[in-house]
Length: 220
Image (tube, rainbow, N blue to C red):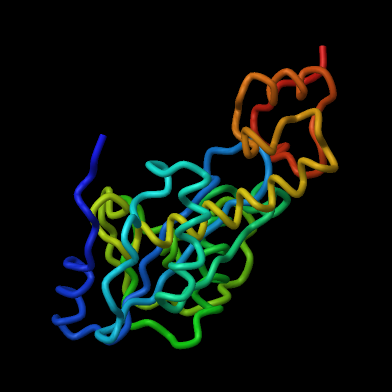
């Protein structure tokens, strides 16, 4: 299946509306059973050149193609990745942990953006108006105005590039952790609920990298 090349058309329209620096944001690992949640961010400005050829939503790319694109993306635009650990997900809940990871990524950019373009329909980056039931971490970063866009990773090159950053950083960590916990198959399943992962949980129980507040299989 072929896909139309992604462009910065949406991002440039936002820049022409008065935004000097636009942070394009996407996450990876939200639905995994273990490991961190990862948030990638790419900064787009009026000086940003067209995206590297082949950039698209990370889920549409093979692992090999993502790794081929990674250095090109890193040379192309200012970028950062933030993560929140399984322990933080257990303590805070998944959405506050995504917020924490996103704040870490935004804070690591070399300049502060004026606006954020966030994939999805839910703004998990801005501080909630009401207190959470979870004991949240203090805000790390004062987030600029956030614009959410459903399927932005399929429409916007900057968001697709952020998805690749988030995915490759998280995958690399899960492959590294798999060397220490080979029974769970993380090098292949990246911590998601694949059969070999579920079987190992049933046989061995969770590791310190699992999200133990989730409904995980337990040993018989």
